[in-house]
Amino acid sequence: MDGTENGVRYQFTVTKPGTTPDLMKVLVALAIQETDLVFSRARRKLETGFQFLKANSECTIEGGTECGEHLAKLLSGFLIKQVGEDGFVVRRQYRKSNQAMGAR
Image (cartoon, rainbow, N blue to C red; front, side):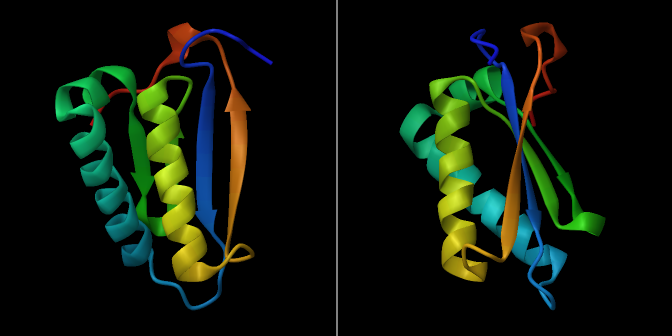
């Protein structure tokens, strides 16, 4: 496992049939708002990034920092509550720290 900061990305994909991509969009927005309350918007923008693909009901979050891990945990918890533990998958992607995603 890569122990460097920003060494992991979490790719969340909703797999529950009949779930609209808008659900993921709303849950990502809620997780971002909560993370901003805990860490500040500036810190979140500096320490983590995310990509949302509406067509696939997919979101990738840059982890590896306290802020990024918090954001990923929140989204995971929100997804469990809304679609159940079997309604989505999370894939961990390990990489070098110089391949960071852009902050949004």
